[in-house]
Amino acid sequence: MRFDLMIAVVVTCAVAALGLAGTYAVTAERIVEQQRLAEARSLKSVLPDASEFQQVEDAKILQSAEAEAEGVFVSAFRALASDGALIGWGVRVQPRGYGGPMQMVVGLDRNGKVTGASILSMNETPGLGTRIQSDKWFLEQFAGVEASGVDKQLKALDVIAGATKSSRGVNKGVAAAAHVYEKVLSKAGGE
Amino acid sequence: MSKWIEVFRSGITFENPLMRLMIGLCSVLAVSTRIEYSFFLGVAVIFVGVMSNVVVSAFRKLIPSEVRIPIFIVVIASFVTIVDLVMHGFLPGVYAVLGIWIPLIVVNCMILGRAEAFAYNNGVWLSIADGLGKGVGFLIVICMLAAIREVFGAGNLVFLGVHVLSLPAWYQPPSLLVLFPGAFLVFGMLMAGANALELRKRDRGKGVSA
Image 1 (cartoon, rainbow over the protein chains, first blue to last red):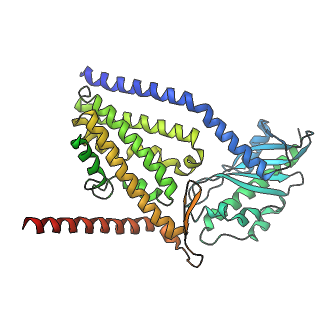
Image 2 (spheres, rainbow over the protein chains, first blue to last red):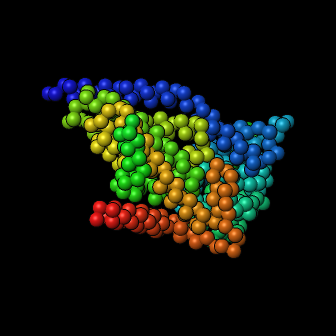
C-alpha cells in the first residue's frame, strides 16, 4: 500500500471540495435569482397585462399536464390582474430544437388564445437557428393562435428558411402549451 | 524576466496551442460563431489555465508522479466549476450560449497538457507566463476565427451588444460559414496563413546565414 498516493489524492479532493463549496455558497443565490428574473421577464413579455404570476403547485394539475406534453412541459403560472382576477396562463415548455431543448414561455389568455411566445434560452446555431428570436416576425405570428385545433393553425404559419428544425421546435413548444391549456388548465380554473 | 517574456511570447507565436500545437481545437471550432462568445470562452480558458498552472507548479514537489494526472484533473475541474458558477450567476446571457463548453474546458487537452508538460517541471513564476501566454494565444486565434465567420457568415460583427461593423445589405451571407464546415474551412485557411508566415521567416533566416 502506498499511503502517500492515497493521502495526496484525498487531500487534493478535500481542498477542491472546500473551494467549490465556498464558490457555490456565494453564487447559488444569484443563480436562482437570475433564473427567476429571466422567467419573470419572459412571462411579463407574453402577458403584459398581468401584474402577478402564481406558479401552479397542485400536484394533480402538474401530473396531467406532464402526461399531456411529456418531456416538454416544465411548469405553469396563473397570470393575475391587479385585482387578483385570472386573466390567463403562462406555460413554461422545453421543446427540442436543433441544438437540444429550448427553454420557452408561452402565454395564453382565458379563452385559450395564445398571447405570445418567448424564448428564455436555447442552443441553436448562432446567426441561423437563433433567427427564431432575432427575426421578430417569427415569434409574433404565434400571437392569436387558438388553443383548440392548434396543430392545424400552426401548419399554416411560416417557417424560417434554413432554420426549419429550430422553427419546428418553437411550433412544438406552442402546440404543447396549447394542448396543456385545452386538456388541463382550462378545466382547472382560477383556483 | 527575459525568460518570462520568452515563455509568454512562445504561447502566442511558435508554440501557439491552436495554430502550432493543434490542441484544444474542439471547443474552438464549435464556439467561434460569434466573437462575443469566443472572447468569454477565451477569458475562461486563460483563467483556468493560469490558475491550474499556479496550483500544479506550487505543489509539484508534493504531487507523487503516479497519481499526478488525477490530481491535475481535480485541480482543473475545480477551477472550471468556479468559472461555471460565477458565469452562471453574473453573466447569465453569455452562460446561456456557452452552456456545455464551459464545463468541457475540463477536458480541454491544452490545459491538462500545460499542467503536465510545463507546470509540473517549472516554478510558479514561469508557469504563470506559460498559462497566460498559451491562454492569450488561444484567445487571439479563436477571436480571429470568430470575427471572420461572423462578418462573412452573418453579415455583421457585434461585440458586447455594440454593432462594430455591418456588411452592405446586398451581401447574402452564406450560412455554411456559421455551421460546422465553415469552422473547418476558415481554420484551415488561418493555418495556411500561419504556415506561410513561418516559411517566409525561415527562408529569410537562411538568407542571413548564407
